Image (cartoon, rainbow, N blue to C red; front, top):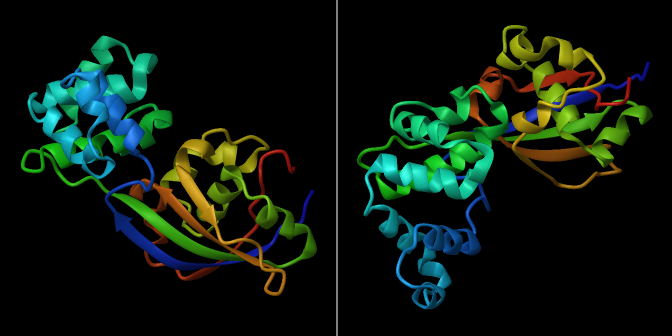
Length: 235
């Protein structure tokens, strides 16, 4: 049994309203082509800095529900059938689908879709939000360094869970996975993470993690804690 021990310090837990890099100029071009806005030659001539505005302007010609269907088609393709897309389009206005939809594998994309709908229909749509968490993690023994040198979503999810009480939503939904050697759902809990690089002097790394707010709500009043987190396959 590995002997992993870490000291974690929460440096920041902030609400943000857009996932960095989720919508690129190519994405906006693809969306404009998908909704058949103007002719391809005219679309290709749009300056990159104007593509977001043009995509939202094109979507605004539809109702919110029809626009949602178009963006769902573009971002999720055949992942959802026509009926599912229609149902989600009708729910977007009232529901936080990036937290509440039954399939957590779709949460990140549902948030990205919600952002475009908000930019297009700000008076009809609530501002979507997610959490950006910055945490510095120090290994307390030699064995523990491996997960700071090669971090994974499964390690980081268990690390976050260790900082919250036993009633947090990760533990309530995935108690068995947390303790087992396989936690595939962690890839849909940690939407994206960035690392500062391992500091040999302090045996530490700083991670910036993007996820929905409900997964990390229990860390709001937490500053420091210890963790015995491990990655999948390390038991």
